[in-house]
Length: 122
Image 1 (cartoon, rainbow, N blue to C red):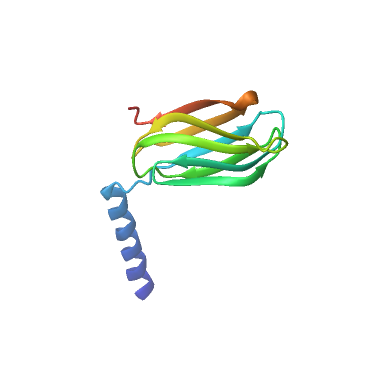
Image 2 (cartoon, rainbow, N blue to C red; image 1 turned 60 degrees about the vertical axis):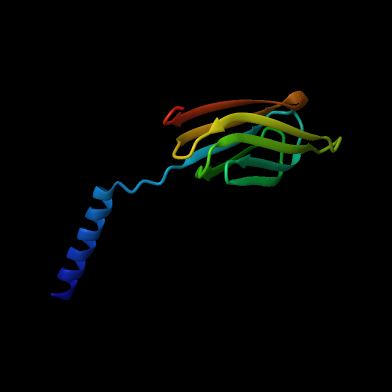
């Protein structure tokens, strides 16, 4: 009898969660190192937080998933391994509640391209 009551309670709790519309908005990010050389100290800043890696080999990708809590531009900073030159790049703005994908392609000469598939669009 107890297991039936427990199962019913879990079902009711799950149903309430679905009806309440609980949804966790996430952005799947990929940083692609297409600079032609390894990079160090990769940092991606987005509104309210940041992520990164100590190093990223030439041709390698780095994946991260995050939530946007505020609004503002995404920024990327990394150090070129051989020259120790610091590169800083600004990307598109992100808005609280957006979800989807962003692809950051690091290119030679300190350039980058940003490809986004985000909803809702602002």
